[in-house]
Length: 96
Image 1 (tube, rainbow, N blue to C red):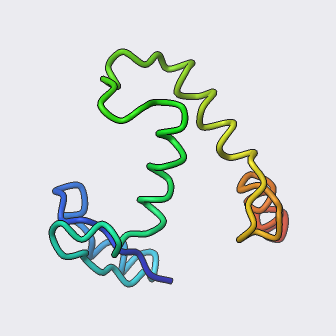
Image 2 (cartoon, rainbow, N blue to C red; image 1 turned 120 degrees about the horizontal axis):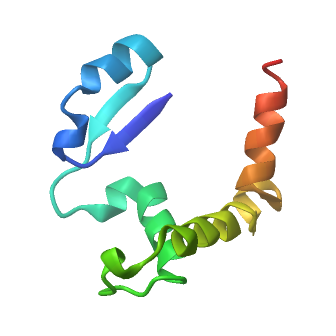
């Protein structure tokens, strides 16, 4: 499994991700958003609910939770038209 991140301080302990969770971490080049496609896609989905330039401090927790719920329950072609929630629950059910 791999993860590609930006160079933010929140990934300063990336060694733990690699060692503990067996995830190979790669860092995107500065100003190269195309190297983090899934992240940019998620940002685009959220922008359908909260336009670019809108102050997130003005978004209530309830509004954000509803946007995330709708995004996670939207069918996606890349998941054979299942939602992210359905796919996650399917995977989770295999762990029990």
